[in-house]
Image 1 (cartoon, rainbow, N blue to C red):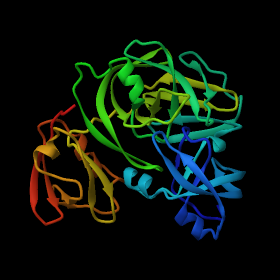
Image 2 (tube, rainbow, N blue to C red):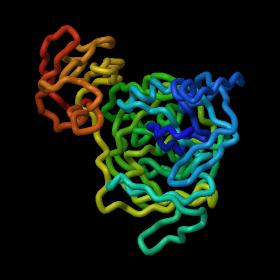
Image 3 (cartoon, helix red, strand yellow):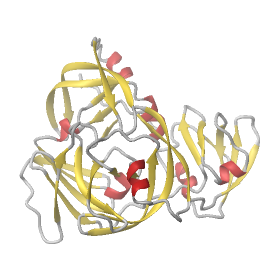
Image 4 (cartoon, rainbow, N blue to C red):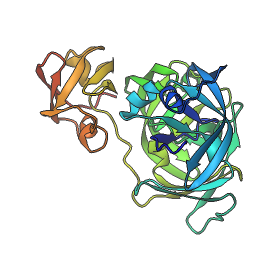
Length: 338
């Protein structure tokens, strides 16, 4: 964009691409058309910019329109600056292959992949808001449409009505969580879904969130990156096809053992949620507290670019030394809490 290289995420769950307000200012964009964008569980105000050229995968594409919105909540949730969300409009007319284990993708022409032995073809359709949908099942229930959402860091999200109707929380250990997205921070119930099936392949023990509100009228849930990354993936939106092959080295579906909902600022992890009955709750942490250092290492801009952020997902029983915003060192014993 105008010669600028920016940090972006690929979000197949978003019908349209989104530019951050700060990037729009750098580019000198000053649109006046007001719009509302809708996330999974809420809405946010946005502006509409027209005729924007974006280079992705070695190709330039001119989009007739993109949204401009505040992406600070997305950046905080991911722990790194996100200046752009590449939506389904950037994936159209392309065949995109994802190798998650090696952090690579390749882009070709639509219809350019026919599948080979070991690959399974799954149909893609569009929902009422042009979100990409695939059929998937949980707990051996019938297949239902779910958003295929590369932009979600949650393995599985389920609508609260679907969870209630099928009594998915009955006898299941559960807690609370916070979800950060373009529509802000939303509370959710968190639990483990024992069985999820995408295509013919069953996936065990998927960390799951059920937001308090669910806006989609086309899907009962969403399949996010941690679950998608159990496969090698070829996505051909225009052909309406998704190709899956179980990955030889799927990425781990990480389970939090701390109970913190955190937003990264320049030099601090800001506590935005404390999960019910979690180690963080039992240790007296509260919303508004801050973490300045972990095991003696200060929080800085490198936090999400190496393994520093993985402390929350270490095995239960691990003791982590946290320096709070008052300069106190407080030990936290990680544990399973849902």
